[in-house]
Length: 429
Image 1 (cartoon, rainbow, N blue to C red):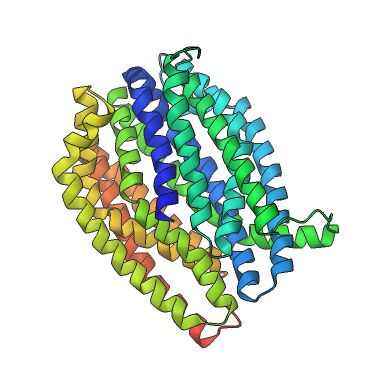
Image 2 (spheres, rainbow, N blue to C red):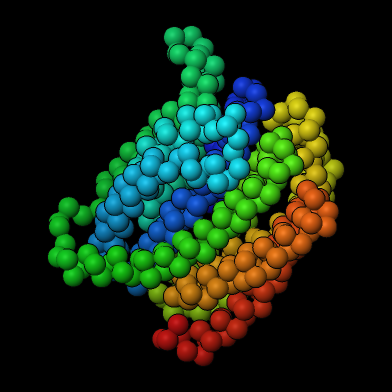
């Protein structure tokens, strides 16, 4: 799982690296796209979490036929959702990014990138759900290898299409979007092939409406609250981006670089939380509640320890890391400031992710969503506005750190209560 998550992060970092060579305006434009892309991925993740919870429980009970039906119906739902996002996204490109604070100078670059990126959503959502189904069987290696393959293709195509080497046209920011589309399309083909040929988890029989709607309801019961809760984070990121835009576009560019470094640094924690879904689902299906409790507790302890180690490394190397992506001193300073202030709280955000994944799989999506809402809205937004007025950019970054720590402590406390209830009432969980 860690390899797979790191591959996803590397995908974005490679884009950031090559786009940074085009100039600070293009890098800032890419940073403005990040909140919107995160919102969409939040819905995609919610769909994947709902599918994982459903399929892994069927696998845990040994009902392979039901798992195949659920996988097929999940993919059908993914196609519908992808189509809806493409239509809405293309119709709202300019007003959305104007709302986020993109200037008239940057907006053409953003439009150029996102107009192509939206069309790639079919190639993003379908393999994401497909790979979630593969992981539900206990196989995390294959989805990871698929993502590594996508990263390699993207790394090859990015410089060719962005800068126009050899017979390829020089497409600039559009080239980055096209490289993403091609590499993602290849992952979709691989994922569907493995599900159909090897795992036998795609069936061709058309289900009755009652079966199909029943499966979709079960997925969306977990997927919608999970997706909405995950959407809160990028919406908050959008608020942060708009706040930082008041201090200049180079500060936004630095924030964009820093958040990508954050994703890479936390990749092992994201991998841990993604592993908790199938782990909890299979053990819940088999009635092994105590294994769930131990697994989540160990994961939370590891998250905090890993986060503290990250804080030391990123504090010492923040400038060196920023210089990999840009030579602009203002962007380097903005990146370094974020890493110095926020990095110590990364481990607590890992706890939030682990607990959230566990609660969703235990059919507690509303509790999981409520915790994220309290973290980002009740704790986060007031802190952002207060510390922004108090200390500007450093204050905004301090508020992010407080939000991560508060959310982690709250999630760990609630998780203990939920697990205890599952032990006492396993059939009602």
